[in-house]
Length: 123
Image (cartoon, rainbow, N blue to C red; front, top):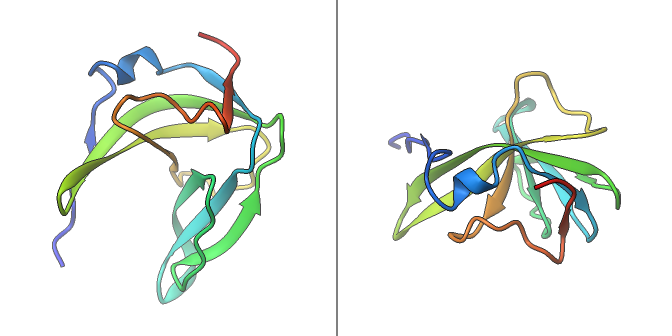
C-alpha cells in the first residue's frame, strides 16, 4: 500500500481564518484512539468526531465533556479516492492522549467546525 501524503493547508482560505480559534464542545463528541494494528498499544492518531467508529484499529473511545475546549492549531488535507479529506490538527483540554500523537478534527471544505457540536469561544 502506498502512503498517502498529508499536506498542510493552514495558509489557504478559508482554513487560515480558523487557525488559533477556540471552541467549546456543546454536543456529543468522541475522541477515538487509532492504533497501529496489530500493535493496539501504539497510538498513531486521535480523531475527534460526533460519530463513533469501533473496529480493530480503534484502541479506545473517550466521550468529550460538554464545555471541554478545543483549539485549532493547523489545517491539513489528503487525497482519498475521489476527494480531499480535510481536517484540523487541534489541542484539547483535559484529554489524556500520548505525547506527540496528533489530534485531528474533521472539517468540511468550508472550514467551519460543525456548529451543532462546537461553539466558538474566540475569533
